[in-house]
Length: 633
Ligand code: ADP
Ligand code: MG
Image (cartoon, rainbow, N blue to C red):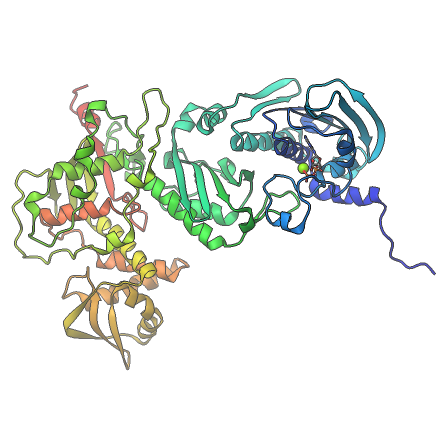
């Protein structure tokens, strides 16, 4: 008796495979475009009718195929792109499975014309549901044209599952748009039901973005570029005020292949930290270039997902790169006084300003901004007279307006991002303790920096007035120091002459025990004495002596509080709690020297504009705003 198991006929097997690769018209377009790009086309035309349901045509001017290859191409697992298992580990093409043409042909009526430049004539073949209906020679330019008619004509169930014309067309448009972003050097033409939707000439990457998203959007973008050992990030991120209500305008490419990846997506989102309102998503276009050995593109039928060899490394790299790019740009909130200042909540009156084009004369000369001279690092009372505040604020000003727009609206990008990148964490570790109250204050007559109500620091900058909240500013500085300590293992502890004993509740005692390794990294030197007693023998360098027991208790309380709000990462939470509780407070009087150090260190952080809890640190009132207010214009 014959067994129950039998091998499926090729035709049926192809139909099943097609179910994975070809889910909708947009999948056909995607596969055909990938083939055209793999064939090194420089001009690609896409024509669809009825959102691709009745007609899809892709015309390219690429390498073309010989007649034999053209026939073979429709076999399953027929590919010119890989040959060995090693090749599969190092994919540099968009296609590699050799399934697309076979799958498409299984569920539609296909006509292909192709000609290699070296061949006299082109070759035409017609296939329907895998049956070869016609082959002949044709006259044509070199390249390949594929027509796919009546998709799913022989799989009615699939056909019925297709969505509305609008939805299917949108899917196709998305596919074409993503490819056009990733391949700006290619000319793209895209027509739907006789209507030309795109006609893009070859451009530079940012030229292409303007063509696709308009000048306004393109100008709101911040250039991102960074390289680590095996990974390069290149692209653009949107300024926070251009954030969107959906993720639709987030484009992630791995080696120029559009992919969806939650982890990297999250890294970008995280980098915006509190710069975005709830429910808003940043616009971004990022291409990660990495050795194909380190990423597996063969994990999903539509190749839309990838697996990284070391995802957490990539996560961290994306996070820090995007963060730095944001920090080195002017995303500082500007206080607009145009509206009646009594109206609305504060956060409604804060909006993110556009970077302003400085007049050419106002740009500080190289000597004036020369990095080293403006880096403050001093012990209290020492060398302050040498400090040239003009230089200091010249530097801040440059950071704030790091990427001015040219008059013609074209964004200019610094050739060397290093220049505007915040200093590394060892710089942060050089941080000197704030001076204890009562220490003699060096005379700083005539400097453009003031403390107001022992709460805010006012300082003049080239384009206006900065207002800094001293508590949140210090909070941001401490927060980043603590995070750096966690990474570097180099806590700066001041040993106490008289260790303090503190009695905790049982639950706080076990919390301290649990957090001990982290607390030590922050700079606490604690002895667990038993019986819920802790002896504080040393405290972080930045904590004012005398407050140690109180600060430890406050940090624990804050930690417990944030826990209830469901923060996940214990170290980050501890960093935030510590920063909040150890920072100078509103009401603390600061000397001019302390204010200068504070401002300098603030702008050396990665994100000087918002505190770890999301409150604004800096507000700027531009001179224009003041002029308007006083009726000068
Ligand atoms: P894959 O792209 O995974 O190799 P496909 O089924 O998409 O598989 O294509 C099979 C082969 O047909 C490709 O490897 C390529 O050699 C050839 N081919 C397909 N489309 C084109 C094209 N537009 N121009 C040149 N060659 C093509
Ligand atoms: Mg392919």
